[in-house]
Amino acid sequence: MFVWIRNIPSKRKMTGENQQKHFVLVHGMCHGAWCWYRLQSLLEAEGHRVTAMDLAASGINPRSIDETRTFSDYTQPLFEVMESIPPDEKVVLVGHSLGGMNIAAAMEKYPQKISVAVFIAASMPDTVHRPIYLFEKEFEGISDDDVMDNKIIPIGRPEDHLLANLFGPKYISSKVYQLCPPEDVLLAKALLRPTLFYSKDFSKMSPFSNERYGSVKRAYIITSKDKTLKVKFQHWLIKNAGATIVKEIDTDHMAMISKPHTLCQYLLDIAWDGKGPRPSSAKTFTVMSLPQSPLKAGWSKAGRAAVKSQRLVGLLKINDMG
Image (cartoon, rainbow, N blue to C red; front, side, top):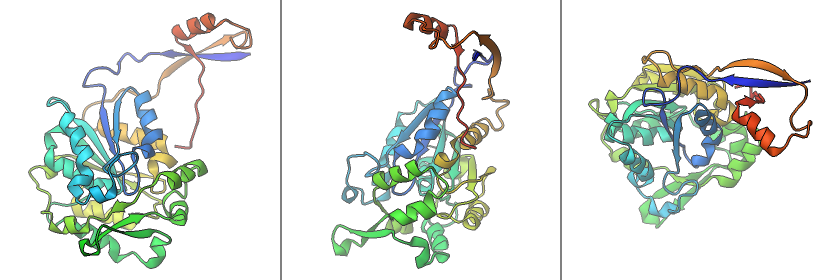
């Protein structure tokens, strides 16, 4: 007996600006747009638009790290995305890890284009101190054992005093991706690129403003088994800067890889917070029993296509415990 599932479309279709959301995803240090692939596919399957870009000298961005000497250079691809957003559209801006600083810069520059900013285990600045303050606080609790086999790489001339960081294989496996599938650990080891610390820039930058950065609603997602950005420090970030919405996910630092389904639901909940009920991701199904699979019955390609066009689809749900 082969069981088919018929998907009954929701009465509330995912169309129009009040239904469809546009998520802009910003990666963290050493990473690229590739790290969002699991989450991006889930959000798109829910009917939403997703933009995941590589920051400068990251992922497959063609610029070299020597060409991204300022934090503004590094963030430029995100600024270009925000520039392209129509004046009447607001995005859900999501930053992971160091990407929190990039989305903070976008919040300062384009507050009118952001409905909510979501910080996932991310640096979240306040409006009182210069941005370097966060990193000074974070580094207070870091020992040599915490950095393990990470590489500190000098960039440019010695007098430039520019240093980049590249996560080492052991650090990736035990501190960043410790709860992720092994194939994703291998992927990260192959794709990571060094990122500048930008300490000089963060020391010189003025505090973010209440009028612009501070006017955007902030949400924070704590990663409760994080060995990269310690949970205690994440709580301090929230207390220091403030967040309208706080959620906690039982993952390592890479929540988008270790529990993408849970993170997807959190982002959808945050996107609709205070906006009324969002379209439910739980779909209504009716079960229909057919004699056997069309494949086993030897149905033609046209026959199988006809079944698909009538919205008879097999339910194959992979539960990643998220």
